[in-house]
Length: 198
Image 1 (cartoon, one colour):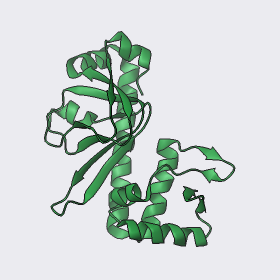
Image 2 (tube, helix red, strand yellow; image 1 turned 45 degrees about the horizontal axis):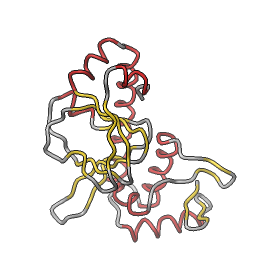
Image 3 (cartoon, one colour; image 1 turned 30 degrees about the horizontal axis):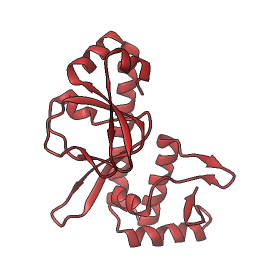
């Protein structure tokens, strides 16, 4: 996303977050730009029944939580470390200064936000109109394109747990497991040592 050297030039702070630690909560007002150095962050919220819905999962070199930062609106979800994670934090005022002084970075941020908006619109249509197998495959294909999942001789290793696939598609874990097995039988996915490949 933004080059680490540029973030450090603008005095970004490095912070380590422990697994399951909450970085910010739904309803908080944004104060910083966040970018992952290493680890994994999920943004999620819960319905009235306590079921988690994951809005997005973010990895190394990705940023998260920018829309409320630009709009000065409250966060619509919680940001939680999926594993021990190191991030850059840059105060909002400094972040805006960085964008004004570096137009190419502004364009990259716009492209990134557009990509996320595009993904959300596609997944909204998928969740409301398609069967579980189709939803799971669409999410996996998006993950390959957007998250740059590693590829080896078996194909692309899908770096989502079954629970995360369920939380991202609105499906129960049991349904996800059945869909993955059905897709394996159709030759559209491979399961090797309990890991899913496309």
